[in-house]
Length: 90
Image (cartoon, rainbow, N blue to C red):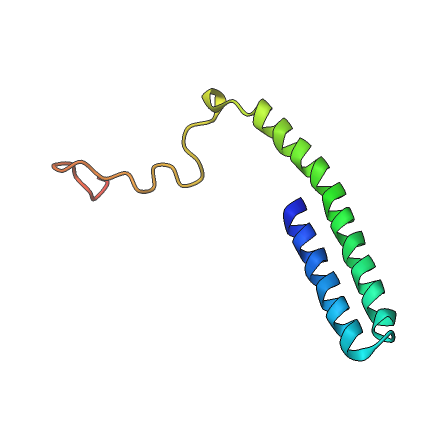
């Protein structure tokens, strides 16, 4: 995520530089807040990613596949009837 965020910031700064050369200093009135907003969003996402990752690790540690209940909501629904048995239910 850090590399992708760095690439986004680099592209924004490059676009801001090209726009500054082409249009002048007024572009900075819009471009600088956009770059700062992107940095703030990336910081927020980075900070919110850490608790999610810790929760995922905690859930992975407490999961024990040996204690998983066999079957489920549709267990037995698709069980084939052995040939030779009466299917009428009598």
